[in-house]
Image (cartoon, rainbow, N blue to C red; front, side, top):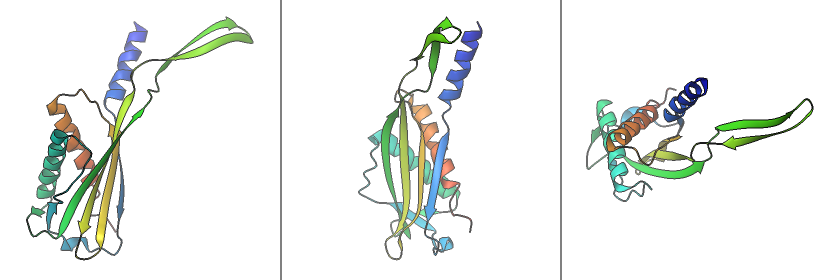
Length: 169
């Protein structure tokens, strides 16, 4: 029974994978100049079509809530890139035979391979400085999630990414 409790605890902790975000920006940028945005027309995000729509929708919702407006004649453009990679599960059960100073022990891994996504959002001013702000997130991602959960995951990623915009000086 104790083993089952610990297994459930491990599953709960690993299912709520944290989102890590790194920011970078051009120090000389006057961020108050940027009030309008749009997306590059040739985005090659690396996401499937539905996930790309979910991410763009989450970005639009958050940027509009921040007071920015999407227009054709935008002051900056947004580019999106992503990569997917696998990492092995860190979960294992240790078994040992023997006693004292002699014996054999072995770790038996359990669980499945973890899928991680790295998503990069870049703000680009084509008329002045070029790339002026960038956020890169990394988080676990489940391929078999329902659309509602995928949408919620992208909203959480965008929320965390845009928490660093504009950067505090």
